[in-house]
Image (cartoon, rainbow, N blue to C red; front, side, top):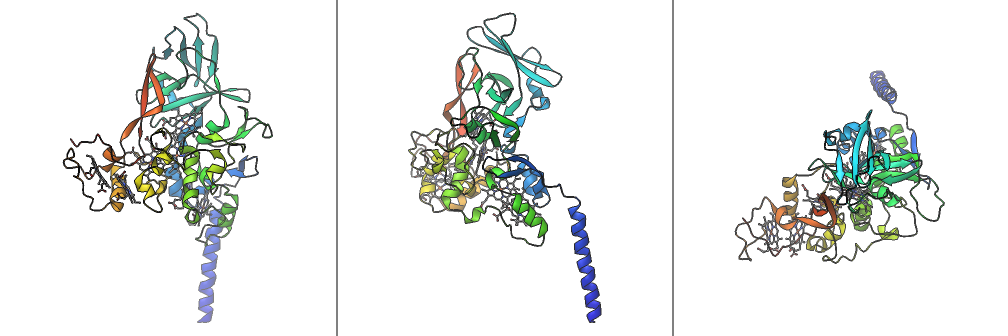
Length: 401
Ligand code: HEC
Ligand code: HEC
Ligand code: HEC
Ligand code: HEC
Ligand code: HEC
Ligand code: HEC
Ligand code: HEC
């Protein structure tokens, strides 16, 4: 009997070892693709697939992951409509968008001149285009600049980049804070420089917001879990479950509480688990709702809401799964409202007839005009972008239809 048991045990061990060996031969070897100036090593997101396949697959579809990329013509091909690749300004200046052999360029013409005063290649794309659009960056050697022509997705139209005047203008340098919100990491060329500039090490930029932006150091985690396949507890990895409310919100606030003023500490030093106010001086913790703009300040607005102030543990993850695309998932969001507001009684207000209880959001988190984010869709005519207000509350002008 014991012999049989031992035999079975050996078979079991044998299969386990075999399947492990087999599996390990499919490993994508862990190679470091960039190194933070603080020593943190970044690896490719493909090293997470073997154990977190669903999260990686859904993350690849998110606006976060798609928010920056090296230029690829097929990503912007539909913008090139014959005879429509122009952006003309009030004073007669214009930008022509041209293409050659899957590369694309912006050519600037001063006051209807014959020859362009510049021709710059579109080298990087910032913005997923899922909601508003994309901007294009140009490399001049190791310096990074923003090109004046952007693309507005909803109308498939070339536009003047937000903040530029309606005339041909010099390219704007791209400082680290811009990339801090739109990439995982970008290594400065001269980290010891006292002032921030727009020079980067080109092959040390990790495009898109990937796992490591929000989960930090992963090398030890991957190595450990690969060697200890039967351990179902994640080791050597940041655990959000152990974070305080402030720590959880800080991670999102890094990019969703407005630009703020960077303190003396350099961009990209903030990591998951840190408190944002130690890195960037922002007033998101003492919000005053009338001063906040809806553009990229979901944190401040949420914190000014009664829902946040009167409940103990609310944060962004109460409603959002950061690994998923959730645009248009009204039913999901509505159910979350109802989970805290069961049996609410409307009707204290005479203007309100019977509110549609399957659409809390359109009344209490309406789309609002951004005060700072405006686009020039027609010559010298600025249109505000509509953003989802995170100030959950009662709009005095509400009436049901
Ligand atoms: C060899 C398997 C393996 C690999 C490779 C791996 N993980 Fe994990 N990871 C695990 C296991 C097992 C857990 C614990 C179960 C769970 O939470 O899914 C875990 C948990 C986690 C957690 C949750 C920690 C917590 O408890 O809050 C994060 C975050 C995480 N991994 C990130 C990553 C990232 C990012 C990568 C790629 C760089 C990666 N993992 C690669 C096996 C792995
Ligand atoms: C403080 C963080 C932050 C900074 C700095 C920042 N952005 Fe953004 N950006 C965001 C967020 C967040 C959004 C999503 C819109 C929102 O939430 O209001 C966004 C949206 C965009 C979009 C539109 C994407 C879409 O939805 O289609 C573009 C394009 C863009 N940013 C370009 C830039 C460029 C170029 C810079 C630097 C010159 C920059 N941003 C600086 C956080 C930032
Ligand atoms: C925008 C930030 C962000 C990015 C990017 C991100 N995560 Fe997460 N992740 C979080 C947060 C926040 C939590 C904690 C969720 C909670 O506690 O409600 C989490 C939780 C997890 C967990 C444990 C809980 C679960 O959902 O299973 C795993 C595993 C994980 N992430 C893996 C990954 C992997 C792998 C990637 C890259 C493909 C990734 N994450 C990218 C923010 C992020
Ligand atoms: C490194 C900066 C960064 C961090 C950290 C970050 N975000 Fe974002 N987030 C962005 C940018 C940039 C966009 C707009 C991307 C685009 O469309 O180009 C965005 C978009 C979003 C969107 C809209 C998605 C869509 O489908 O359009 C949601 C929701 C969101 N973020 C939630 C979160 C939450 C929750 C956290 C914290 C766990 C978080 N973000 C952390 C930069 C960040
Ligand atoms: C984590 C629980 C929680 C969630 C989720 C939640 N709320 Fe609240 N909300 C509260 C609490 C607590 C209050 C304050 C006490 C009260 O009025 O019931 C509140 C207050 C409100 C108020 C009154 C605001 C005011 O200024 O007087 C409105 C309106 C509201 N919530 C709507 C919503 C909507 C819509 C959603 C979904 C998008 C939502 N809430 C999600 C907990 C929550
Ligand atoms: C009470 C639920 C709730 C909470 C909490 C919440 N959100 Fe949202 N969020 C929503 C809803 C609903 C939408 C609209 C989704 C859509 O357009 O389909 C949204 C949309 C967004 C968008 C897209 C903005 C736009 O204008 O299209 C971003 C970015 C975002 N949330 C970030 C955050 C961040 C960061 C936090 C934490 C500070 C947060 N959210 C907390 C419910 C919530
Ligand atoms: C047609 C617009 C509309 C819709 C849809 C709507 N509300 Fe309201 N809600 C209002 C108005 C207006 C008030 C203030 C007057 C009142 O209390 O009747 C209000 C008040 C509230 C309050 C504060 C009053 C209280 O009882 O504490 C809460 C909480 C609330 N709504 C939650 C929700 C939730 C949750 C949903 C979705 C299930 C929802 N509302 C759907 C317009 C709406």
